[in-house]
Length: 215
Image (cartoon, rainbow, N blue to C red; front, side):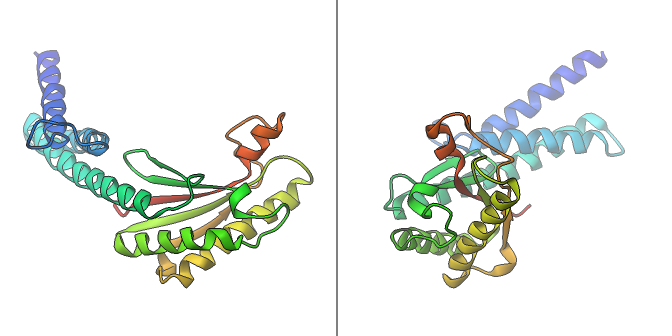
């Protein structure tokens, strides 16, 4: 009996999440599904811990969580599309994970070697990003600097922090509320590719701008 109830509850959560990520014409919304599914699962877990009829609590919690997750997913979809439409540099990478947007600025277009001064050619795209952040104000933003592992680790840490600060300053200059922004230097500690090749090292030298909806 307990197994049957658990199976029915899981099916209910899945059905609710699927409904939240499906448009009226039956098509799947791009990233809404991930937000709805995550929200449904979290809501179901919280509902299970509440007092009273656990099955009802789980279903209600899943419904609320899926709805909220779906709304977040829709907003991220809208923000992502608006950002892509406004960016002119094809080397700027934008990834929508379903729970956050990650905008990656490779060093090659952002900074000269060993410099923390943003290249003039990128200021237009950062101005477009600032406008986007102002159009979608219910988010927080982490600006994270990364380097490769060439040279002194302490120097790389400092350089990554200075680069993150430089991007943050431009966004503030574009009118973004400073309390939404946080600059972080990761140095050489979070590579995304091998540092054994020049291509890999170039990928590791980057600034990531992580945009998260406020919960």
